[in-house]
Image 1 (cartoon, rainbow, N blue to C red):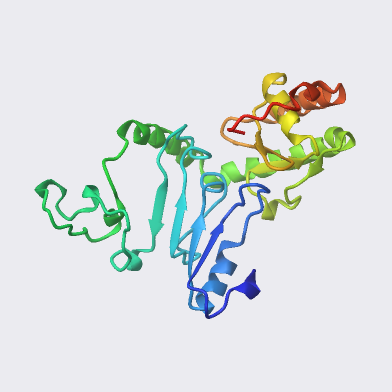
Image 2: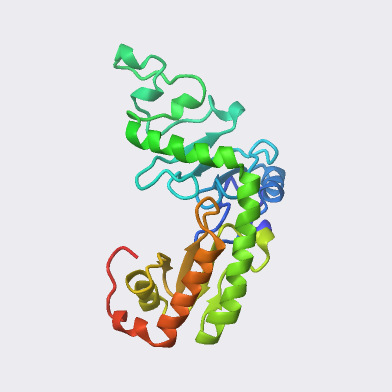
Length: 259
């Protein structure tokens, strides 16, 4: 990747923690590479914010986006967020300009005049109920502290990988996430040739809720705020029993749109 960034690169856009494998990039070192090439860098922090310590200032990040329904606990439909480095805010254009980004939104002028600062990237009316839910979710993260959350998340990931090696690897499961916690976010992805029917059996039979990602990945998100080690042990034992008995085979031909 470093070799692909050169003086022809205008923008480097990466997921901080990759959605499928959980691989987590070194934000500071890649930022240095981008700046040396004269490029801006944009990070998608959807799978890291709230569970991996992030310092946009120290990493000299230009732009970042992310969601709030994962580790910020905002729930389904909660709004996304945008970060723009302060000295870039007035020089960048918002392609979806709308009235909350106007300098005087209640003047209802026919000509659009963007406000100075980060608010120019606002669009329409905010989803108030969703914002209220996000506020509560973020409050818990702040009260506990991301460093504390990360420490537990790392231990949970290591424990789950140990459980995989003992109980699931003999059943044909592979590890599709980095084993080194320094390069892994807060989800662990397992692979299996029959991942789809296993994922359905996990939901319907084991009452364990994973994500299936084509073609062969089962993703397990670990939220240190409300998941514990007993949850992980219970989940692995249930999955091992179902797969060992072939209970997933009943779901082999069942593939809905949402997975």
